[in-house]
Image 1 (cartoon, rainbow, N blue to C red):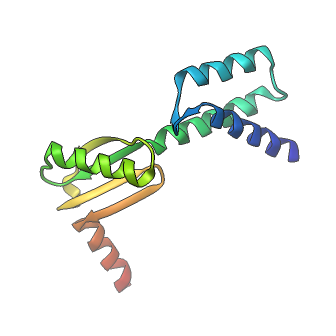
Image 2 (spheres, helix red, strand yellow):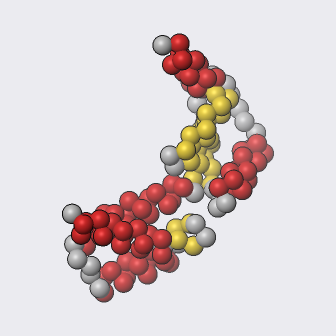
Length: 131
């Protein structure tokens, strides 16, 4: 079991080597994969599976989904993107989606972080507190 943990830690270090200023670098990923081809680790499938998991996590940390009800100006989306990049201290790219189920307001998702300033979110919290 300790060997599997060591392989996961190795994959995490490889993923860290694949980053450039907090973003996944295509060139660095290619270099890591080329090194793994030349010097195959013990249990390569486990290493590659975990490496892929950590790379996907790193990619998702740099993406935000902004859901909104109604309409939002592009300048507001750009301002949110700028503020998120400053708060997270790394470049954040945004995708915006209309979601009428929110009723009004915004919901922003970055990786595992969810910021919900929507009417639907507040109503759901109110319902939980009543029960």
